[in-house]
Image 1 (cartoon, rainbow, N blue to C red):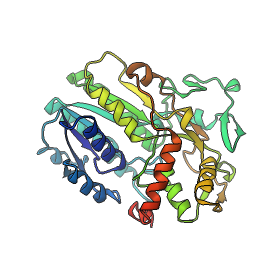
Image 2: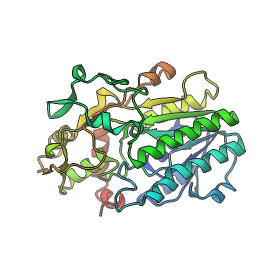
Image 3: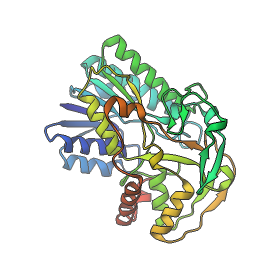
Image 4: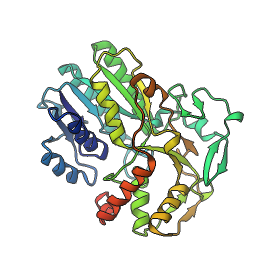
Length: 356
């Protein structure tokens, strides 16, 4: 099997590449990356050592696809993954659209031309902001917990947010680009008989992630806490009670691998891929874990609301379990410990990640 990974030198892309090689040493993995993200060059050297062909290419540029080798599958791990992308000074709205939507169009055209299948890594942020922001919550053990008895919404249960949850705008500009990309991918699949799988991923976390406040929050928090850098809870009374679930990209790789083995399987093409309730925690709980691991460190508080923030978002991955017999295998405690050990071994990781 020949696999091309777009965004191969990012945390997720590079982890997928190495994991695919572990699954089958005969697989041929190559990929493209534009190296705009700090730390990408470090992953590039490691991948080349592992025999992965890494090409400089930008998904926004159609001509960069002209000389790419023919492959059986394309995995789209190239995106600006920040929910604040396009609305802060770090990136413009046009840049976001070009990366996340125009890039998808160019990947789909490449798949159309070569007959390759596509696995798209989408996001939990395709789900509507308003019903999530209005979710009534109570506080237990330094974390928000939804009051499901007083809030009946389709696609929301004690297991989390399912694929039936609303995707009506507003989503965030980032979420809108990913949802639009999903629709285009499904239309290309129907029009040109291309195998397409779409995985809506929760928060990905693990050792070697380039952590920043708006993306890679688990790696950023643990690395910053270890270095005794200033940290602060933002919004929600400045208490760090907001909750997300996390997932190791190796578990994503396991699902993608199954999907690439089954191009014509008669199941739904879109599924959530998250750690679920078992891996959900608040920033305050993450701080408690860090305090036990590294010793106490004060956290500042800023109660000012931040755009697109929500109190609780945990993905219900029941469909992925039913359709693919898939479930997370790396528990949250192991993910956090792996990040901590990596942080201790790489004292300059925040600088490498672009957090100067």
